[in-house]
Image 1: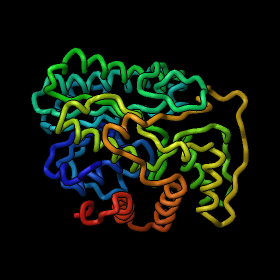
Image 2: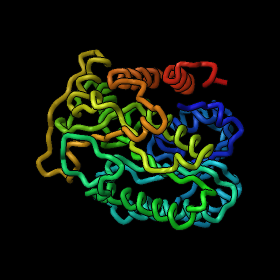
Image 3: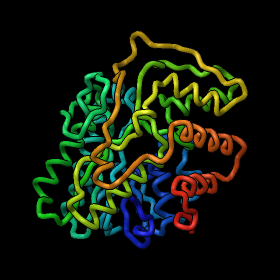
Image 4: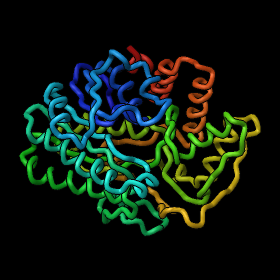
Length: 357
């Protein structure tokens, strides 16, 4: 499915590299021998995974805003990338209600700006825009959304990512129909894993509560989400970018999520956390009656990704939660975070020699 050796020596440009997913992605690509340039704002939290991941001196890191086209293009042109992975976003639903204009500026015009960089270049062979499972018009039905379902996210975050998808589709049709650059989007489900310090994400909240020896507060325990370990979608992103680099027929729009058995309620996820964490961890249902709207039931149909690439998820939800707990416990005793990331990457791929230099 994915040969990380493909990335050895490849010039890769990543937007959003200082975020949770971005830091894991950088660690994977550095270990694979890629020449990585990242462009992003300062890390969004303190502490943050990017500062812990041992990346200093191993990538070119440019601090900048994707809304600032001249700065973005300057960094882009200097890197001369062959592969572009667009992760930069305002990713929090609640923040999008608080700052809708900023969310649209970042998620929509940020996409326009990076695609303009690609359009005006002659070096990029593969471009992937990372969006979200929330781009679909949510009808609260029991089956997974497919790539041909209508795009119409409800809240400003989800809707802005729907717009980002449409921008990408337009650029692919208008400027890249000649095949000079393969263009895809990846619509990933909810990710968990070590190093996520964001607010309003359930497992970071679990770790903070367990550290404080307090009950975990769960505000929406009955919502069903396609939870997956962060390495699952990152491996899929790299696979799509690789395969369309090699053959443009693979360019398209792909869902990336777990199997149906791993689409669980938030309450079930927290139960798993309490079991894996131990120490008497517990949670309380604090359902919010007047909370901002979020989808209650959400699943993805990943048949297209499976049929196109022979892809399948590697870790079930219990394994994903266990890895998240392992990472957090090492962090809480000031252990070697870079080594733990490499251990998990090697375990995920099942081939230490192919992952670690």
